[in-house]
Image 1 (cartoon, rainbow, N blue to C red):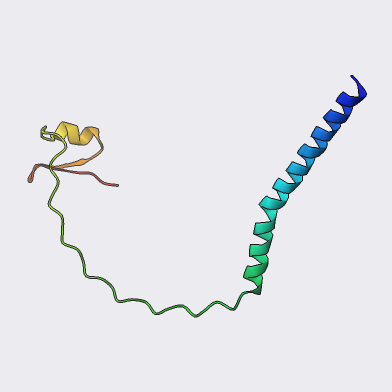
Image 2 (tube, rainbow, N blue to C red):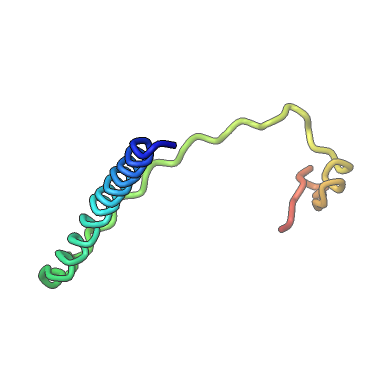
Length: 94
């Protein structure tokens, strides 16, 4: 390499280093000033009073069954439920 090429490379590196330093300063200075402003700010105000509770919403309509198949005693026991033969209802316990 020639001396001129070495100087060009060094000046480019120096310029890129300066750009990096400026970018770092531009990135960090706002966060530092915001923290100092928050520290220098006034004391927080008192909390406002709670608002009155709102009225309950209307009940939604019942959903439709996910399948058209009727649950049988065998199907109930296969999922770990208890079959009520009087009402033909499967009860799933947690």
